[in-house]
Image 1 (cartoon, one colour):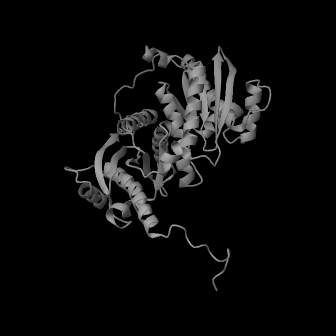
Image 2 (cartoon, rainbow over the protein chains, first blue to last red):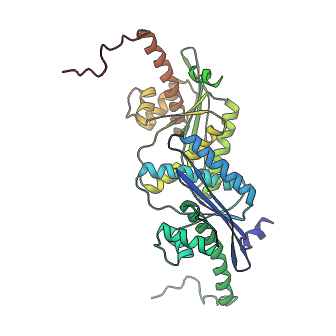
Image 3 (spheres, chains in turn purple, cyan):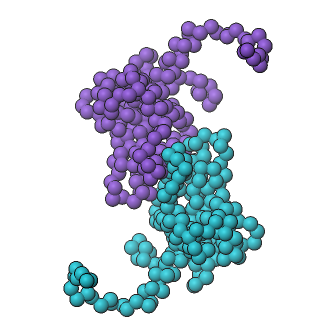
Length: 189
Length: 189
């Protein structure tokens, strides 16, 4: 049942870091309390390519990755800032085909702010790209250098997996049935 | 041959006006010097729908339209301005799946500024949305009201068809082999 699966914690998560030039992706699996690196990669587009062709390459590669790794969820970074309208528009185009690739395979998409994602791997929200890259390599025990955009994607998937670990811990600590309020709509004076 | 087809003037053009809430589309055919309305429509998305689901609906409907009308080219408006980064990003997402739909069927995309598109149907570049809507109805002899977003899409297709008509006229008027300049890089004093 779809409803039942939604409530189960995700086991395999695909993180995506869409970009007009480089799109990073990374798959992480949670086994027990452990995180395991499954795979990562980048889709590199040349500036010489027509926009539509670039988008087509991003879409096809992500569709292939989704098919290969069968993730339970997709996680990506919410965007709040951009240099200007043109760059926001182009980034939006890349995000659009990433969201579409997930939707076409019926996989739910979750979005987290950059601060949430960085906090989940480096411990604080204003870490540099390089710090994220280093921590990802160490956390997931990846031999060799992980490209920055793939590291960001792996961080997004860890962020989503961690949220469920924390939610489960919070649920264990909290009382099972919260005490109801005495009267609904009571105004505090 | 693909190369040969590229040089032929387009006969059927699909105009698209992508939007986060309403995406308009319109198909126009050029027969001789005449423009004929083939079809138009809109994809309406609710704000309550998840972004990925909306994008999936836009993509599927445009893919259906491309399959049904088999256009020679796709035409859409270049975007230079947006209210803010968030709206540029969302508009970009809708544009992304529209560009992808065309690319996945191997159809070339052409982009024109709003001024070029409005000029091609109303005669001046700063026409209102309503003026475009009225002129589209009259130019293409459409009975009944054309939704504003579909009218914008039809205008984009007319703009692309017209460019080829003008190019052919210019080619007729111009000497077949332009007289070469006496010396390259001559400066006018």
